[in-house]
Image (cartoon, rainbow, N blue to C red; front, side, top):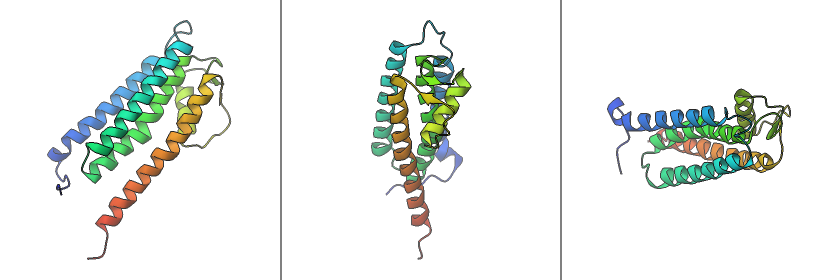
Length: 167
């Protein structure tokens, strides 16, 4: 069994990967959520949604097959699931357009990011609502939130219990 990382040098690749995920998701959200109303729409939104599914599947595969350290896995899962996934869903909502084309009540990038976090965590305040194709995207985000947050909690509890067993 491989030894867990303990020094900053051993964590370097994991931290760089996490930073890359954060930067990529922020740039996707920033770019796609600022499309003009003429550019945004069903075509761009659908392409973005397909890209999001491909990204989620590839990340899940990577975590399950390539990351061998449980601590690194939990760290990357936390970054991905808590920061990256809602930003990417917000980018997809933004790609469909604003002014009630995708999310009723969303007037800009900050609104769709807020809606994405509320949907991902399944809080559902009810102040904004998805319409059209975005209803399916919101449902997928809610299910994704259930599954990913559950996996993250289970992995964190597993590591904690493994490290705190009586000797």
